[in-house]
Amino acid sequence: MAERRKFKKRFCKYCELKTDFIDYKDLAQLKFSLSERFKIMPRRLTGNCKRHQELVTIAIKRARQTALIPYIVDRKNVVESPFENVR
Ligand SMILES: [Zn+2]
Image (cartoon, rainbow, N blue to C red):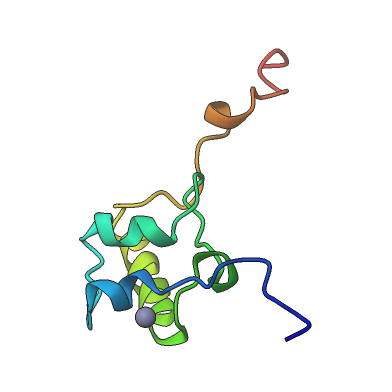
């Protein structure tokens, strides 16, 4: 094999846990697919399989609607607001 993968093969964390259903209230499970700013991580980074990624996406979107996860993180937490002095 001339070409070898640079990255070790990632496994789907949900397959390892053998979960067939991802509950939107179970934030511990959703955390695997959330970035620091509560964005949904793409599959190429998490290594989830397609089936579970779709389940996670639905669960996260549902969790957002029920206000368990913020849609966006407050900007002040990340960068100081440039408009703060203006107001
Ligand atoms: Zn999976």
